[in-house]
Length: 97
Image (cartoon, rainbow, N blue to C red; front, side, top):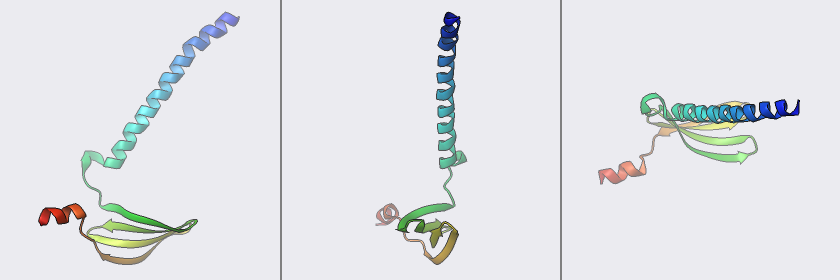
């Protein structure tokens, strides 16, 4: 009776370990695919900067179609606060000089 339990445990523990390892690898590959986008194209929306004002209250600058949009972020949702032309990237300025 005890040997049967130990035998089952010896067979099922490695199987469980392989299943956990495989699910972690799958999650990592899917996450990297979602972050980089399918085919590696650039994203239309880019988070430029965030600033914490108070617990549950943030300011965020988002770049969208060559515009920078200032958003107020709270638990209730997002509120657009301002909009301006996008600033140039530091590496783009260095390439033009």
